[in-house]
Length: 247
Ligand code: APR
Image 1 (cartoon, rainbow, N blue to C red):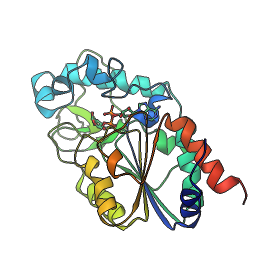
Image 2 (cartoon, rainbow, N blue to C red; image 1 turned 180 degrees about the horizontal axis):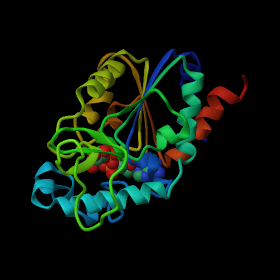
Image 3 (tube, rainbow, N blue to C red; image 1 turned 90 degrees about the vertical axis):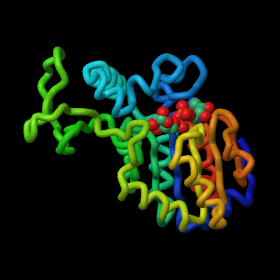
Image 4 (cartoon, helix red, strand yellow; image 1 turned 120 degrees about the vertical axis):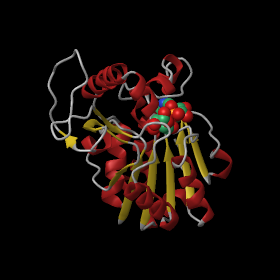
């Protein structure tokens, strides 16, 4: 795979790089995306029935069990070369910020620490009433476990449709996008707001935008560089070309 010499020298010289990732970056780890035809979760399940506060009020057990199933799926997988390449980039660029829409925790597992989890993390559970986070909950599979502080129902600490993103995480993400020199958009369909507006915010502030995605997205026309293929194949090659070859 050939990368433009201008992109290589830009990345070698950049001091602030921000990357936004979506479900596509975890696809090669064996996790399903959301909107891929047939294979995406939303092709089989209705998000409004499983990933919204209304759905939880209507049938908390159905929602709890669905996230328990996804949590088990995440436990069974490992980061892929795309995750590790991003962890490598974090070591090479003076200021590297990783913003993810993923709730799978694989970026952290791959070693990224400057991480903004915009949509929460499926391994965390909190009370739906008092927001108390809890590490442990009984293995009673008959009912949704309750909060030991207020007795409220426990729920995954993720952002559901119709819910606001955690303010501090969102503000940090917007600030990072507005002040970076290079913005990578990786493995995201770019249709869910406000995450989908971050690349445009970076573009409008003069950042160079690089898209890596299996297919074109609404961002593609604005991207300075667009690579359409698997992030687990493209990212390691890019890291090698920029930081390993000819240094
Ligand atoms: N490498 C790169 N891109 C890939 C790969 C891969 N191996 N496999 C799939 N893709 C691309 C798909 O072409 C698609 O454009 O990743 C994108 C995944 O898009 P979505 O399934 O819409 O996932 P995402 O953009 O992360 O969704 C955003 O929506 O459902 C909510 O909260 C959920 O965080 C999620 C948000």
